[in-house]
Length: 213
Image (tube, rainbow, N blue to C red; front, top):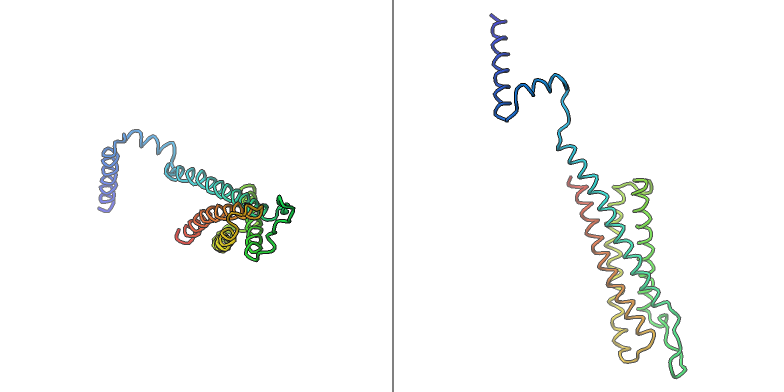
């Protein structure tokens, strides 16, 4: 009696399998042939496509990060250079004032140098991550480090640009090299802040993705 029940059970399972394949639009003959040729299950095509998408998506984030760091490096360098340019004599032969005579501009110069060094470090780290992944700093430490220091650098840059605005207003109409340099430096500081803000959003996205997923 037991062998009869097992035979009936196997027959019913076989019928159900054939019915499911027919409903799915797959020929039972092709299923049998594929099972004979490949007795072991093959990976799902969705897993391969997901891996391919991930591999093409990750380099795009790294490349975008490198581009933003390069812009931050360029803008902060211009901001510091325009302030550090030696003042020239005006038409009357008097020496133009230097940025070292204003504490606000000294603060802006120091912040621009710090932003330049931070951008240079991030650029070097990004290139190292693409060439040799994780050789400098691990991915987890890098995400936390970038998120925190992007916030800090952005605050310093926007504060240095804000304190330089009163100096520009005081020298309106004088058309001195310092006045022109301060305008250019402040404009570059605001541009640097926008780039750092985008980098901070990207760092926050990467960190949230690491924590949540």
